[in-house]
Image (cartoon, rainbow, N blue to C red; front, side):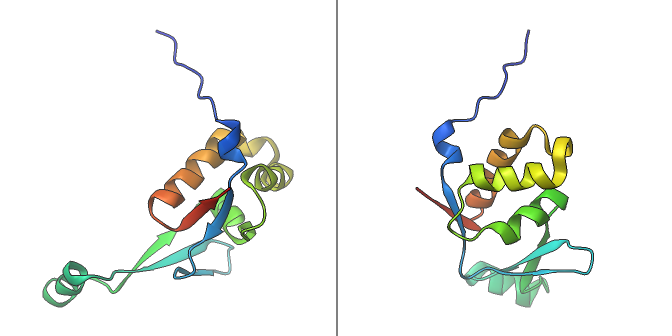
Length: 117
């Protein structure tokens, strides 16, 4: 059976990603972006006291994600960001738009970003 080629909806690529204002992040000396997610809520507080779970979870982005994250400014759509990624990584970024679409879907599912029209 042939594997269906993934099709990205053109409208999705026109969304403008915007970072969550409550999310803290930093870049290390190698350029890797780390998102610092505060573990809030009753069950998280309980786990922190009983099981000594950390107050923050640190999410380290890969090379492509670390390049894209600082470019998210709430003004550029995914297509524009893709052009910058293509310019920087060249063929290494391929398949570019399916990869970027998945990246932004994951970021949105964790509420790290909001996608605006």
